[in-house]
Amino acid sequence: MKDNSQSLSSWINKNKGKFIGLLIGLILGLLVLFIGILKTIIILIFALIGLYLGYLWDGGKGLENIFKKINR
Image 1 (cartoon, rainbow, N blue to C red):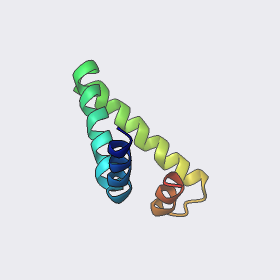
Image 2: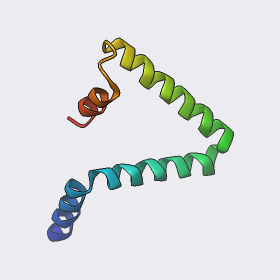
Image 3: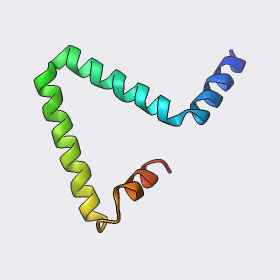
């Protein structure tokens, strides 16, 4: 069991983008399934507005800096 968790952890560390994409896809799929496409789109719009406001609050240093801070 411990070997499997180390193997999974190693895969996640090597494939962070794929893992994050998998989680986002899973969350979006569940949202569409449980609350519907329109409500999911509205949530995504507000999330993007929040991301943009956070970007402005940080002084507009660039989206790549926001993602670097998130990945720390």
